[in-house]
Image (cartoon, rainbow, N blue to C red):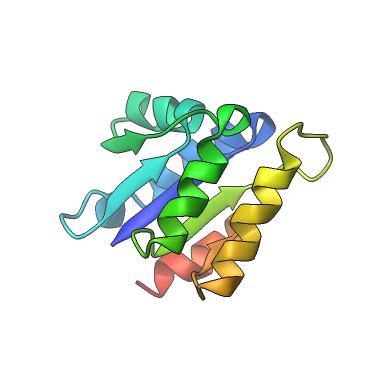
Length: 120
């Protein structure tokens, strides 16, 4: 199962904490993590094996959206910062829309991500 992990700058520490809390499951052989660039670097520093795409503002959100449309990504954990403006907002909305179109579970906060991870 491919799980995409993405987090805005103000949520990266929260993402790493979430990953660490679920390390046993996420390190299993049937889970592959894919991530936007900076989030992936933070996850790697925490000891996770991650396939990185571009940083979100440079097209990484769009790359992950394409993977959702291609049927490669089965879950998206995107810790968004709703209080900040993001220049790549259209890509973020495209990713969220494609998760809805292709019925891919999408968590935009740790509480929802917790429920999705428990369902695996």
